[in-house]
Image 1 (cartoon, rainbow, N blue to C red):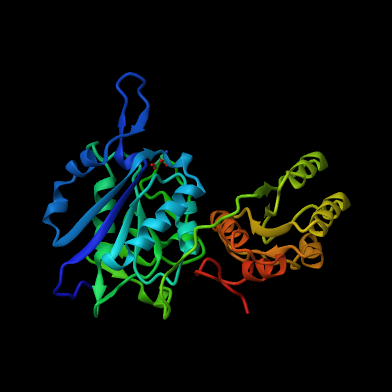
Image 2: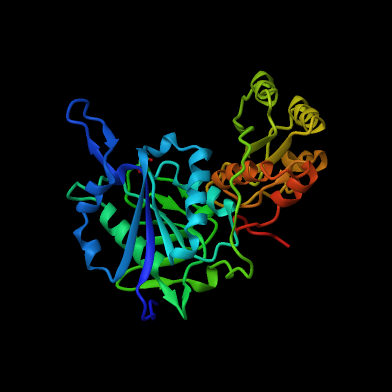
Length: 347
Ligand code: ASP
């Protein structure tokens, strides 16, 4: 697809993660090391006809320490250097990569260039590392252009030969190189002998200029239902000080216990202005409130059905919307529509 004469320029950003880790000789634990050494492990990069500039976070982290402050920093870096580059590659630990990809998709409104998140299951300095292929192909994807336009105008996750829409991904395997799934949306590209782009699945190229939103509100909770859940637990979560919104992780197509105390507690919380988003615990498929009797109360009391959104996308979307100074009704309306391709709208 790279049919251009001019050299593509990309910015490679290192936040941390296994790809750049080394085993501490004293403790035996994996910890982040320095970015320059990571690049030394991939001499292949100098063979690319792509100009690669780099930016490393001063203190690389294991992505389990990721937080919205770093999402905002990342979005700010991409926003302030947007005009200079054809695409961006973000090296990130796989543990919370789907959360960061989701958050960036909301923060970068009208994105028209690729932002590819990648990492690895084995450090790049180890012989069997998956990091080299992930890094090299991500750079190629971020640099790909066609008719002077970047090929992929989205925030994506690239792992083990597959490119996915970032806000559709879920880390499902802690061990396999193939660590991510996109259960409800097809891959955007597959890397074999050639990189095959599934252009029909891309978001449309935006007509307006990039807008970067960095404000978020983290006063949310994820309440995963299970048989035997107690009123005390639900009560405690719903009375968390400052709470603004709750993702209810429900059974199957969005179902929950019919015990009266449960619906009553939700209704009370809704009266207090708390927003509820219904997302299924199933890895694939979608929420259909009202299909079963066990979900019929939700629509009546004002719980928003999350369709086939992942919990990761739901968390990022709620934090983003709560940060935008919208009314409760506006937030509820935006939750059930697709803002960045994060859910399938059923008409
Ligand atoms: N714990 C690591 C992290 O998320 C795992 C990885 O990089 O894949 O940073």
